[in-house]
Amino acid sequence: MAPHFAHVWLQVITSLSTSVAVNAILQFYMNMKGYMTEHRPLFKLLAFKLIVGLVLLEKIIFLILTGTKVLKPSASMTYIDVMMGLPTMVICVQMVPLSVLVLFAYSTKPYEVSNSARTFRPQEYQAVESDCDERTLMSGFQKRYQGGRWGLRAWLVYLNPLELFRDVKSAYDLIHSARAVQKAHAKVQVQEGEMARYMSYDSGNGA
Image (cartoon, rainbow, N blue to C red; front, top):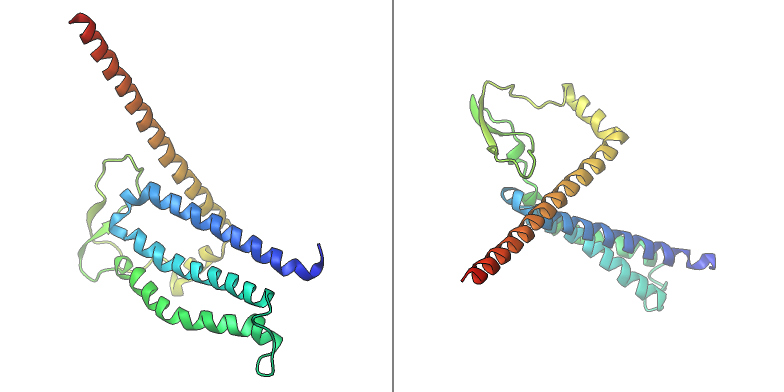
């Protein structure tokens, strides 16, 4: 309970919350990977979560090293160097190759407005059980991004705190719908299995 150990509890809470968040994302990926194959979701997930995982691992390692006095202030390193400078430098160095990986994983090509008069543009996301086509041929659309002059409209939407709550709600609704569909399919399979056993039992009694 001493204030001296507050940083330990903060690190533990941060590590646990990060682990829970990563687990939630993995569950979402497992439920939706069949509908996002063309977007390379696993590649994007690894490119981003690899950064989070390495930073979390390094925090734990530095916490152990500083807690066991293996890494401590010396004539060449001050307390600030040990607690902040060295961990931050390691993170900055490793971000260089990882940034290249993110550049390839999150390519902007699918979102660029084409200069051609006729091009394929994706529809809005449909329900997972929908049978509609994923892409529709459109022509004569406005060849500019919809962020307004200088992107001000996009920045206003981005800085709106309500958008965060809307995104969280939409993600929850999407996961809830996917689970409902899975439960419905499982129920149908159980009913079909029971019907098959009942039919085989009747045919055996009839024989």
